[in-house]
Length: 247
Image 1 (tube, rainbow, N blue to C red):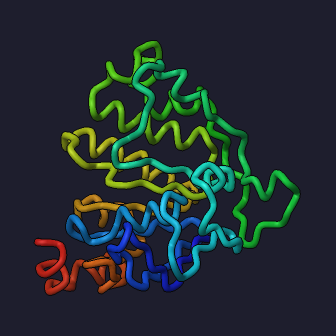
Image 2: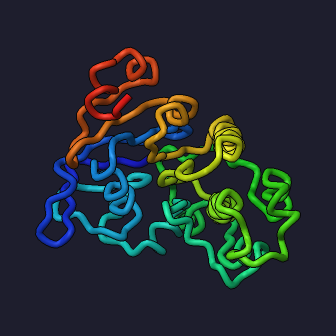
């Protein structure tokens, strides 16, 4: 579904990603782990089109997407939940959810083109379904974005991405700065999405959250992937956890 092959990305003259390669398959949850500055967010921004790699390839559903604008990547069926959440503070919860909603199916499918490995149709994300999953948002649908708590803003950011009816959901640090109770709610929602077969690419620093959700993990340091494996592989590897995850 998503494939990065030998990707090198820069900020100006600073060489950040140094040959990053990995895949996300249909219905799979893949997590990028590492300390601050490891290159996790840069990887996500490269996938989403905010950064164009200088070399290497980024493919989604078999199509090259490196160099596309973020809105073009989104139209192909990629939902993005940024680290800063990115909700509109002057719009209501309902307006945040509906302003960019879209019908199920990627742009390629809408154009009538075959998508290699496309999954079976899932139940579409509508306002009613979002409110069922996030009842707090229903309670606050008339509240403006800036009136929400941090946890509610994170729920709104995830819900808004789902209203795009994505085939791949990309999340950058969804548990950061949130109370444990809210983190548990978000993990429950993401686990439900996983059970429905939605592919997820997740950036996390919280190892417990990552192990609770992901099928495979890639540990990054200084722009490189230094470990790849399953949750069991990572749990057993004390050296990787100690050196790169400060566990």
